[in-house]
Image 1: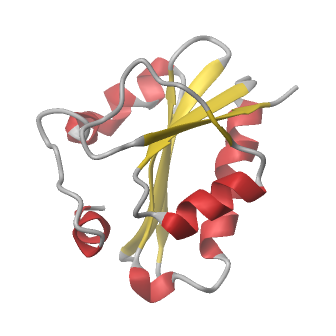
Image 2 (image 1 turned 30 degrees about the vertical axis):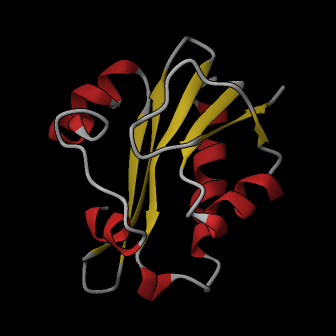
Length: 136
C-alpha cells in the first residue's frame, strides 16, 4: 500500500489513518468487517481492500490499492466488485470511502459503480474527497 501511496505523492500515516494495519484482525474482522488481499502467482500481494464497520449497517471501504504493474487488467474492477459483494454478505447497506483527488482512475471507478460525493465530518490527512453508495 505504501508503494502505491508513494506513486501518487501521498504520505503513509502509520500513527493515524494507517494504524489499522498494525492489527488487521482486531481492526477489521473482530469488528464485523473484512480485509482481503489479491496475490500474484508468486504469492506477492498486489492489491487489497478492507471493509471497516462504522455502524451495524454501514462500512467504510479502506485500503483499496492495486500495484501499478497490475493495473489496466480489470483487477481494480474485480476488487471493487468483491468488496461490494462482501459488504452485502456482511449486511452493510451503506458503503463510504475517502480518497484523494490525485487517484483519478479510482475515483472514476467508484463513480461508475454508483458512488456519489458526500460531506464528511472527518477526512484522513491525505484525503480530500468522500463518497457514499447506498444499497438496498
